[in-house]
Image (cartoon, rainbow, N blue to C red; front, side):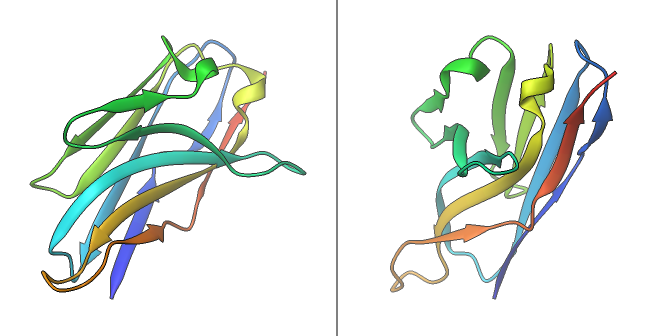
Length: 120
């Protein structure tokens, strides 16, 4: 059983900062990618940022404002969000692509989501 637990969401004023964390636990042999997605009301879930051991990708609106990082020893991924805007308001979901044992395939797992609200 694999769990992803997010933390760090909340209410922040425009121009403010938040840091999201997501810790993976359970039966984990190896993690490939870890990333963050977000879903605003009435919209689809979209990629914000994703990182592997060799590369990092950001959605265009996140470039220059958000920074994704990971601590493999802690099986944790972070998203530092600066210069937040009202349009960043959404539920943020953590994602990990991993295998539970050496003979398993690679599967996607999701956290429960954490609300980020940017408003004055």
